[in-house]
Image (cartoon, rainbow, N blue to C red; front, side):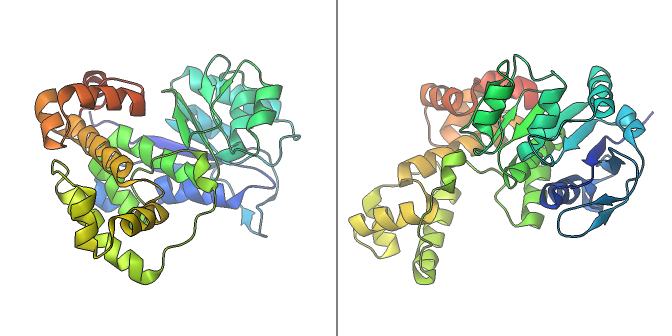
Length: 319
């Protein structure tokens, strides 16, 4: 018997945060025939009866009510209508029942307050927009609030920071369910990176690099990605970009938010993660392919992903 397509159900309510809802639709609700017959199904569950008005004047008609949660594999809570607005008791109960049956609950931005109201996040890690992190901590002290990350994956409970971080979390979930190539394909359709490193500190303003500087740096980034195992010295990179070493370092950090060494390490770790998911190569071979020794790979992998390469492969390897 073929495996049923996972059903993603997004919650809709009066005062709906339309951007976060749109993120859920874009990630999980668009027809994607290139993904095959196992791709997600999508539905919208109306939290309350009657006419639902989203921010910006749109009106939402759900595919059904809370009964849809009984069939869901994933339930998405977009940003909630306000921290001071109580979460309806029927919604809390429906989420608890769905979770008990195996549904994964995912929140975007202030949608974490919906998940928090269920009590399921007690004793677990979670995040939300930096503006709401302290309020979440005060109102739900049993939650281990992580204020400086883009998203938190607790397996069955997934939470993201600000609105756009919902894209990061959604791509992460797609990666979990369908592998890196599927996540990369969706990211290309969205014209976003398949994995964005860093935390909420990225909201700090940085000057936008001038167009001619970006055109000089882009080939350098491509060169580094194409040869992750190479010895990319600042002198060689600066020479290829036609800049002095000091100018290159300044322009590189302005364009990427990272030093060349940190940027390259992140690329190496992301490539190692892809290989661990898709390749039978041993840890030593993976480390060599990305330009890191095995001890260095294990050290940096644990720091970045809070797990070992071997444990990551055991959990996420495809096939």
